[in-house]
Image (cartoon, rainbow, N blue to C red; front, top):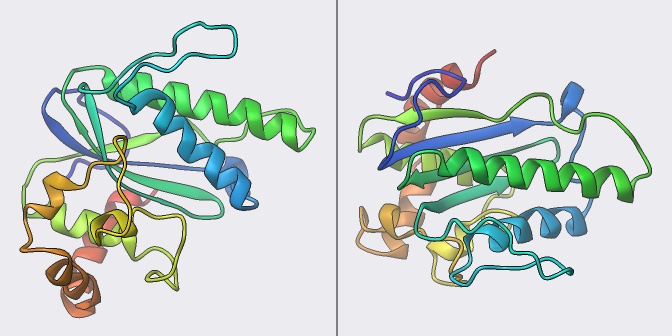
Length: 203
């Protein structure tokens, strides 16, 4: 069972369910460009080769220190599943992503103020079997989840691949994409785990 709500333990070699909402629960992803910009920030920090800004200054390079295993972007919040190899890597990633996206969002929409409700929240996952349910919860967030364009599901089904999204630690728990998609469709089993995850997310 994961610990509830905010990050209480920043430990190496651990899995975390990470999530954040828009300030006042406002939408933070208004169109496909916003989603693409947000996802490209993970590419910036998690690519194999260190990335640089337009001035040639290197960004923080976290490849090998942290793995992004799953994601889903909804209108006013996001969910991530992360495996942290090195202590502190998740904090660096989330600070970089959320700060950079806030700057982009405020500039694009000519606004000021906070974009996010608070610092991200992260729950450590202490039981291996719970990984199944977290990945399923993340991928079933959208109503039309099988066709939703802004989740990591296509990477699990072998339709896409990248060096910054690594589903291997979850997919090794299944025989292949067919078993995983059947697992997602098994709503009754999902329903029981959903209650646990809703408790974790409650404020």
